[in-house]
Every structure is written in structure tokens, then in C-alpha cells.
Length: 217
Image 1 (cartoon, helix red, strand yellow):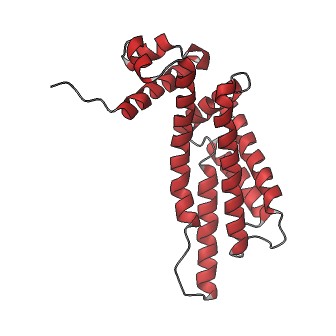
Image 2 (spheres, helix red, strand yellow; image 1 turned 90 degrees about the vertical axis):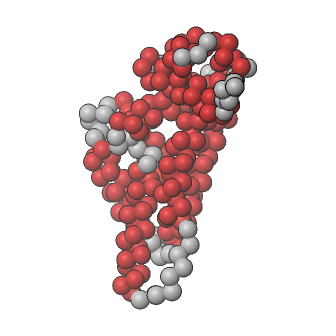
Image 3 (cartoon, helix red, strand yellow; image 1 turned 120 degrees about the vertical axis):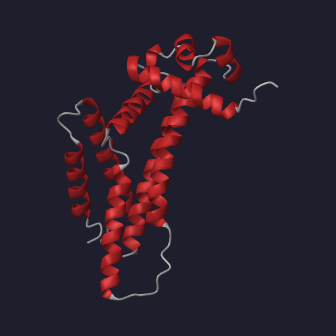
């Protein structure tokens, strides 16, 4: 009986081969031949799942985005799901604000290279976004990821303001842009200079920024 192959699972396996090659040698070395060798497939098998190299690169970039998004969504669902509690005592309110502050920091920290897996992920994403400057087929995914980040940050800050965890007069859209710039800057510096930007320093900078905003205050 012939072996049944899940097309999406195979496409994701090939995308993982792209990421593995790119992590070791750089994105420019992720040719169809090198990717096929990494995946243990013939080039013809790779072409069976992807019409050309451009389609493979776009799929891989979106697969990387999907992985990041799934991890972030797990935190976002805990932080942004409405709370059904009816106890409105000051103590409960203080506890809720503390929990939200911790949840907010944990959510935002997922965008930072705090461990080896996320450092590699960050380096790969930077490589793809840099490639998007000269490869127009990659640009929509890069733009979409940035728009999603801004939308998520805006939602987090709007929620914090609505629950009393931010000053009422705060310009949420401006602060969302500022926070995105902070995360992008920390990501870039920590990816390029990991010894100078260890995980705890990244956490401290993020924590100080949230303190300055008054998140959870």
C-alpha cells in the first residue's frame, strides 16, 4: 500500500529545511538543491510541493511568522480574554492589576531573543525582512507581521487603559509605535551582539519602559 503523505506536513518540513540551511549558512545559500539535500529529498520532490524558489521562500517566511504568532497568541489569550470575576474589592483589583502587569511583560518578552531558540528565530526573521527590501514577493509578509505587531500592542495598551492600568490621557497609538520601536531595536541589538544584551538586560529595559508608561500602576 503506498505511503500517504500529508502535503502540508511535507511543505512545513521543507520550510524547516530552508530555516536550517539559512541558520547555518545564510539565506542566500537556501537554494532548491541545498534545501532538498537538507530535507533528504530530490529536487523534483521539492518542486512537487512548490512551483519555484520564490514560492518556497514566501511559504517559509509565513511559516516562521506562524510559529512566532502561535507562541504570542497563547499569552495574548490569557491576558486579553475577559475576566468573569465579580469580586470588585480593592485587594482583588490590586491582584488583577499585578497579574495583568506580569502577563503583559511575558507577552511582550516573546518578541525578544531571550534564549537560543528565539535568538535563532530572530536572526532568521531579520534575514527575511532584509531580503524583503529587494525581493518584492516577501514584502507583503513583512508588512503584515509589522502591522500585526502594532495591532497587538495597541490592543494590549487599550486593554490596560480600560482596566485602570494606564493613565487615561495616554496616546495609545503613539505609545504602541514607541513600544514597537523599542522591541525592534532590542531585537536587532541582541541578535547582533548577544554578549552585550543578555536576556536579563532585555527584560530590565522592557520592565523599565512599562514602568514609565504606568502599566499595572
